[in-house]
Figure 1 (tube, rainbow, N blue to C red):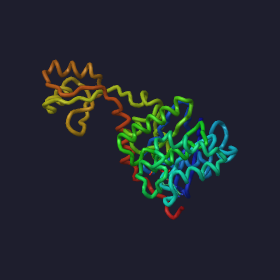
Figure 2 (figure 1 turned 90 degrees about the horizontal axis):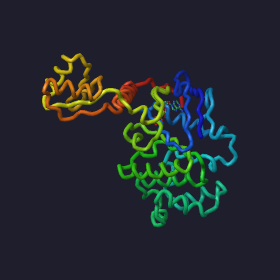
Figure 3 (figure 1 turned 180 degrees about the vertical axis):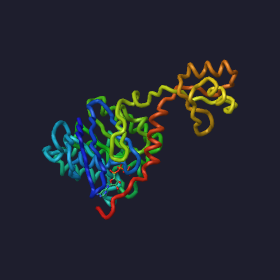
Figure 4 (figure 1 turned 30 degrees about the vertical axis):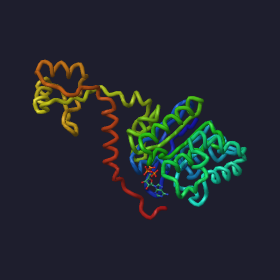
Length: 301
Ligand SMILES: Nc1ncnc2c1ncn2[C@@H]1O[C@H](COP(=O)(O)OP(=O)(O)OP(=O)(O)O)[C@@H](O)[C@H]1O
C-alpha cells in the first residue's frame, strides 16, 4: 500500500504540497482528485522518488521508493503517457522495459493482453497511436513487473466513456486481486466512476477524504418543478433553505421526504425529486476549481 505522511513541498515561497497525509489501501482503487495545479502530480512524483520531499514521508509497502530494490516489481507507475518514444512500436517499448526491469519477455504479452492491445496494434509505431492507446500502453508498461501497487497520473485523460469503463474494469480486477491503485484526475465524474476511495486536494492541501459513498452521500435533495418560482416560494414559506441550481430547480437543505410533503401540500407539480447525492462534494470541488487562480511561483523551475 501507499502511505503518505505530512508531506510538504515548497518551490521558493510557494507551497505546492502542504502537509498532505493519506493512505491508499490494498484491494481499493483510490482516486486522487483535485483541480489543475492542486498538487497531485507533485505528490505522485514524490511517491515515485522523482522529486525530493521537503518534509514528511511517502512509502510503498513501508519503504521509500528510492530504497526499494527493483521498484517496478513492487509499484507500477504511469506519470505521463505521452512520454513514450514515438518512433518505437508498443511491443518494442515493452520489450526494452522488460529487459531493463529484468522481467521475463513473456510478461510483455501478458501485459498487452491485460490492457487489450492486440499484437497488430502492439506492432504499430507509437506516433500512430490514439491517446487512448498510449494510455493503455503506459498502463501495460506499469504492469510489466507484476507490482502490487499501481500509481497512475490522469490515466483516463482523453478516454471516451467506453474507455473509462474499460479502465474501471481493468483497475477493479487488479484491486480485487489485492492490488492497491492510486489514480489522479481533475474531473470529479471521471473518478467517481472508477474509484472506491477519494482523496480530494485543493491548493496543496487535503480537503476531503473517505469512501466514495461517504463523500457522495448528501443530506439534502435536488428538486425541480414545472413552475420553479412557485416551488421556490413554497419551500421558502415552509422555512426550508433552497439554493437555485443550473438548469432550474433547487438544491434543498431537507430530505426528499420533507420536500415531497411540502410540494404535495402546496400542490406543486414536480418533475424531479432526488437525494442530493454528491451535491456537497460537487459544490466543494467547483469552489476549489474557481479558487484555483492560485499564485504561481516566479522564476522557479
Ligand atoms: N518544478 C516546479 N517548480 C515550480 N513550481 C512547480 C514545479 N512543479 C510544480 N509546481 C507548481 O506546483 C503546483 C502544483 O502542481 P502539480 O503539477 O502538482 O498540480 P496537479 O494537481 O498535478 O495539476 P494538473 O492537474 O494540472 O496536473 C502548481 O502551481 C505548479 O505550477
